[in-house]
Image (cartoon, rainbow, N blue to C red; front, side, top):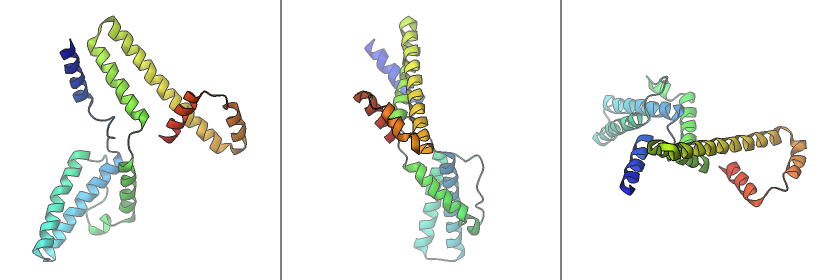
Length: 193
């Protein structure tokens, strides 16, 4: 039985992937990877055309080859950005795209993303194990995930309300002053994450 549980757990991790550990690349990251590949390709072509040093030609050729890995990993964007010429690659839009992609890449999964991934994995395991207890466990875990999402949405809504209604912020805080330490801790974690 214990061996079966390990097989099921490893199988679920393999099937579920690493979406809870690493964010799936966003559209800006995919576009940036594509523009990077085109930039490297144009640089390699220019290095050959301008008869630069052998070292520079080899560097740009290696860069072009390496940049293909990023596009292969991230996937193609829904719409390819204009990047046929050096002028297009060096456009202000592509510079902004690079900054946006860098911001997305620096994001890390917060505690809620990890908890959602763990809950989904648990639901999958409960579904595989099956039976009456598996069904009940799956329902319980789905309900816990729904409550977690609801709590996060409520806190985000409260923060937006306080930003839009600064004069009511003091009354809002006063209404919540009797919250337990556990609730305050959870709210602080959600706000920070």
